Length: 241
Image 1 (cartoon, rainbow, N blue to C red):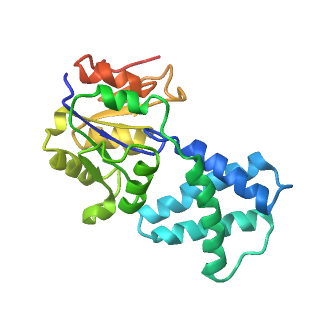
Image 2: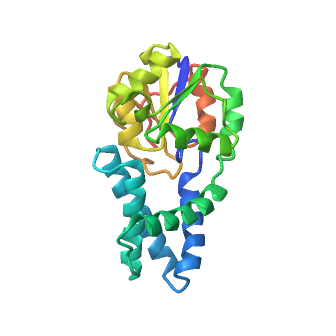
């Protein structure tokens, strides 16, 4: 099987989102609750991010609303007063965001791999378009992709719904069966892409799938560098190990 185009997820695929969240939050925590258990607080912050971001994707919260819920949740967890209005909550998040953005960077191999892949490339993300474009510019990846597509681009449903994957292929002008989608989440990214007719590639940086049988039609790679062989036509079969 050959791969003639690649669509990417961004957070924790091209960009070290989790690392930036941890570093940015620890800096903010040192300002507002220096005596708090740093590891426990950081874990709660990440849990709140996952919870309320999913609510945003499901249409329960606006983009700004999910940010506010995260702040209110962590303040309650810390035992601090939770503002009734939005202004103080927004200011709290803005201070965190400043630290988060300063800590955000592409993974070390990202530019090397993008330079090596001589095929059409795009980004399909559940982020907001404005936020994603700003992030790509900030980490030095602006202008590298022929397509940058998010649910708010055309009112499309979020991954793993097939519509977003299909729109990415259509925008690139490539066939689904020869377009790979690479992401760090097995269900949302790899299985979602596979079910949409693409080549689903699970970027398993932390070895969560080691020693297990992968779902049919999903390829697991340990890092982005493995993509170069995949695109060259050496796509492995179902991988165990």
